[in-house]
Length: 108
Image (cartoon, rainbow, N blue to C red; front, top):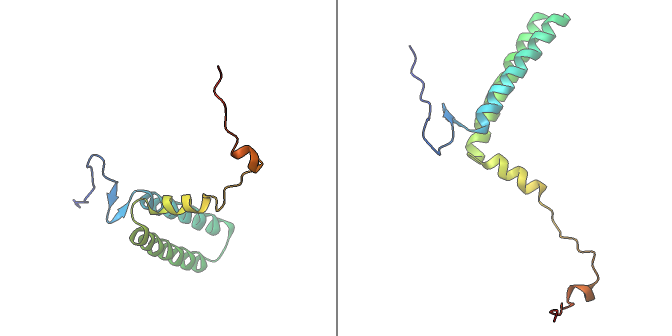
């Protein structure tokens, strides 16, 4: 029986064969989607060898890209990258400048 190192530490990210956290889900979901696409292509009537070549090359690209992203960005890197992209470049203030410096007086 094969022995797979699975991280079960408290507070540590899930890791399997070097893939950490969200990359593991991207990897599994991507392979599942490619398998479903392969089956659909085969059932539509596309040539068997075209389906096989498409499946093998796209699965190879998915594995390579997933491990590359895992190595480049780390555990929380993709979340940080998406947060950086959604962060506004400028803060827009539509109040008049005189209202920004208006001091409120304490009520008596």
